[in-house]
Image 1: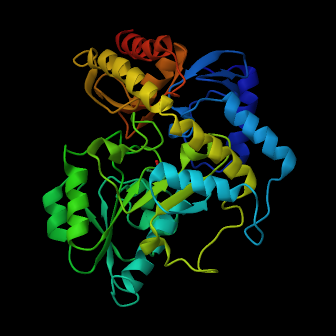
Image 2: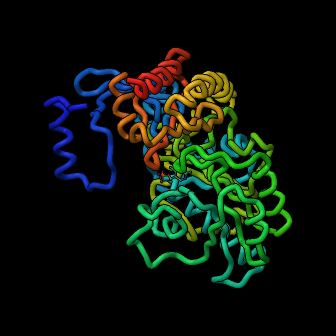
Length: 403
Ligand SMILES: *Cc1c(COP(=O)(O)O)cnc(C)c1O
């Protein structure tokens, strides 16, 4: 795909002045509505990535825009030095949605993961009774939890990690989905197990049936916290409020982000009960924008939309269509399809073409998707997409692989 002269102007500006930390498709978007976006030349595309699940409710959902506009005119920031009339209702409603007593709001997903690590470590020292500066958090190979120095310290992705040492100690990596390895790795000094119930960045990798239940049981048995990073898997994407719900598992700490801010503003949070969250005391953690009235007004609307169950049901229904269409491509350039709800990882035959080449061919057919790890395409269309939109995703892949 050769960008138009108009699009090239924007691409050139980015190339000249934006740090080179991404490798985006050369499609310059100027507008979004529902599941669709429009580029600067007026071409329309179905957004089959949805901001890595931050746009679960689509672009410009009327309820979210209304909540944002209302709050924008009233009050956007107090800092936590003062109270606002938005934080209380938001934490009440999110606590109800998660079934936990306390919420700690932050901004980016990485900050929420960092928060869960801090809370777990304090809990390890002050409640579990390990010495200060001691204890291990077990994490999984292939994980993606964000980009801070501590988080990349336990990444197994060379590209994400290389050159950023010295690394934060106190983490132990085991293979994802390997319950025997976890059992062998857990000791009295284990503070927590941090995992994605489904690995998103890893390519929508689903652990073996029963894994989450077994992790839950092991954590209980060894008095360690189970921390579920539901930043990408949570909030209706998999057809349930949380991916852990598929195994009826309740972690000790939920980590949320992405869709929590409705695709409008960064809003993340952790949820836990008081026996864990009470280790947080005034001054021991915080963020200038964390829990600000603008973000929490939108977040409260997101929670209200999730509380109806409508989006979870829709993700299940549309996901079944997407999955059956994608399965029919196996053997025709597609090697494997993994899916849960409206979320799929499609491995294409690398001998045919690269993931990026496929994404450009899909874009020519009006569908935006992004490759991960070379030959995997991750599909996470907005849950407001129509059945025709879902069919278009599969047909664009079919045509792109055969053309
Ligand atoms: C995106 C993501 C993060 C990081 O969120 P940011 O808002 O980019 O910092 C952490 N964990 C998971 C599972 C994610 O998908």
